[in-house]
Image: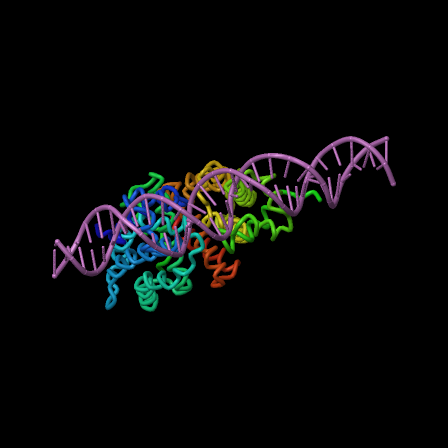
Length: 178
Length: 178
DNA sequence: TCATTTCTGATCACCATGTTCAGAAGTTAA
DNA sequence: TTAACTTCTGAACATGGTGATCAGAAATGA
């Protein structure tokens, strides 16, 4: 039958989004496969959750690879493009804050995914296009914080994806530019 | 011996902060009581987690009761005061995003806790002291998002409590004021 | 068709949760 | 101190999810 890991991860993400403590049995059932097959691919439940996190961060990383590395361009425009992409990943990424178990080994993946954006902020800061009195780490952290807030609002049905992206960029740019 | 629920909750918060999937056995051990006693107070693990959430939100609510209800005062000053109080609750509140299990019944407690702040923002917005082109919900959500981001940075040892509070207020005010 | 890979269902051990209860330990009042 | 009361404890038990193992079924591919 040849079941792809990707298929398992997609189904698992959907099931766990609704019910972070869903059993592997129920995930297997939803994916139309047996529980044993899941264990063939992922030795433990935590391994599955970690793979899920890595997958989500890789998708986010792909979006953030779109930021220019040789020039700055229009900050607001670049950021809006990236933000729209990230907002649309809500379904894949939101569980990162809902079911971690104890997964803390994702740090390097976080860094890898957000590296390009952090570097972009760094260059913008050096060029005095972003405030220099705020730590670079905070520029990144605050952006992520707003992203998560927007994800929540979108999922709650209080905000459309497009408007959410605009609010994030508007809010963040107002605070981060000199 | 007369064990207070408060004592159980405090210990549980500490243990679960480090290890969201800690067993009730280990929590009981850390609290110096027996597992049975925990079950005497909280019928299920989820009940304990919910009580923990309610407790955290009540503490946060107490802090936010400090916002003035009859006048506006200095927005930055009021906000800084509240933010300092909330930042210092990190240890009690951060687990809200780390171990929810499936607890989703905290909505009313969220509203109750953040009600005063939301009302304060509403009045400030009406008085044109805050931007009117951003939804009131977003003003609140973005503030919470920044608060969570700052909690993470503080816990990671990247930021002191005082500086974290200042960054939140600076960032939020820059974006939310006309 | 036959060999190989992949998936499945069954069975097993282990551990955390949740229940029950008899008795120990602590408290209060006479 | 004694007696009545409340609270805490340890032990036993059932249940259910996780993780391991493996023989055999099903799919794949030459």
